[in-house]
Amino acid sequence: MANKFKSSNLTHLREQESKLLSSNLSYNLVSETPESNWRKQRDKIALDLYRENHKSIRQVFESTKVFLNMVIHDFRNPTSQIHFAIEFALDNLQKQRKKRELNMKSLNS
Image 1: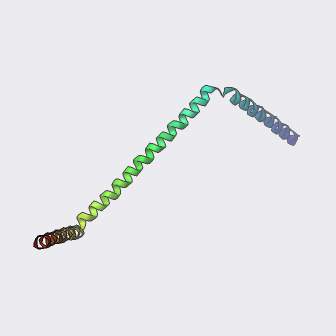
Image 2 (image 1 turned 30 degrees about the vertical axis):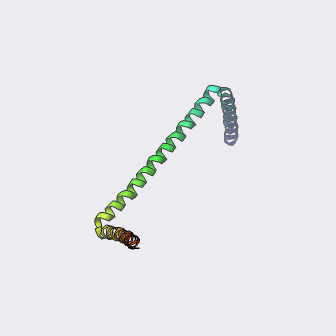
């Protein structure tokens, strides 16, 4: 008798559950108004904008981090900056010498 009670109780609970589910489905179908659709679209657009904004802020943060790491590296290793500056100065001096030599040749001829 106890088993019969349990099985009838289970079937009763399942029937109630199915009724609730069907009522929720019908409620959801009825409650889908243009206003609720508009709200869902608005929320989706707001979420997309938030994600884009967050992504751009994250990219700015990452690029700033990379730049500051480069600056820190340059401060820790000033010889690389000095080397690049000397190379740049030598290149400019050689270009100016070539221009002067060409000017001298054109004046002498």
